Image (tube, helix red, strand yellow):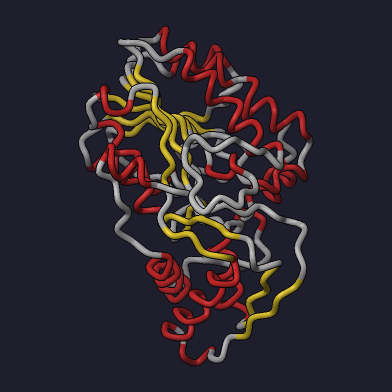
Amino acid sequence: MKTILVTGAAGYKGCVLVPKLLQAGYQVIAYDLMLFGSSGLPSNPNLTIIRGDIRDAKQYAKCVRGADAVIHMACISNDPSFELNAALSQTINYDCFEPLVRASQAAGVRRFIYVSSSSVYGVSDSPEVTEEHPLVPLTDYNKYKGLCEPILLRYQSAGFTTVIIRPATVCGYSPRMRFDLTVNILTNLAVTRGLITVFGGTQKRPNIHIEDVTDLYVKLLELPEQLIAGETFNAGYENHTVAELAQFVKCVVEQEFPEKAPIRIETTSSNDNRSYHVCSMKIAARLGFKPQRTIEDAVRDLCRAFRAGRFDDSLTEDNYINVKQIKKIGLQ
């Protein structure tokens, strides 16, 4: 593998992943709509940045030529995307997926990594949600994420290795920051307001540090194909309730910013009942992948970024919230 095309490369995870790929010696094609700009990507002679729409089959087919692998992350991301035009989420998250996979295979791509989501499980009382658990979509986002999976597996072949990753909710610092993810939201509230608002609190939510999940994507390029071909893997680490996450955030922020203590926690009702306890034993046993960083590490990283002045108007700026930015731009 020498050349890697990454869709969604200028996004939250992409801006952490791309530098790791470059450091590992890969040529990288960053393919992204650039809704949030490309300032989070590094300047590097081995990086080609393309403003591209995955719905544009001709442009994508042209850009993927010469790539050895694709890491597909581009989508209308996270569950509040139901606030958008439903047709938009369908065209980006589902309708263009099979043409994209077909074009990749036709271009000679040998490995296709699809980043799905653990939110495809919806609500489950199971103490350990494994990869065999039924998918129970509650929103358009996790419905389309799940519907793409069997499409990809149909294309699995000796010359075209496919693998599906269902990551937990990602947390931690990125040059293209998001404050619409649970741990990141709670940390933002704690640092800027001194008050954490918890909606519900009893819902179980798995999380994984952004550095760990991007390490995994690099690792998937290096593993022998027989270990991953046609496989689906959960990729989580810590499973906690939202109320427990708030307590972690409170403790770390009070340590990092003692002048802000005591940070209060207020609990209110919520209509978001997504709750599941993801089991990541398969990926540990088969691939030897075990996350190295904790939720507290993610909160501490964010606190240090706040102290360094890396976030402007973190509570009000649309650029930190995917759905708000998409509405603002008027993406069609």
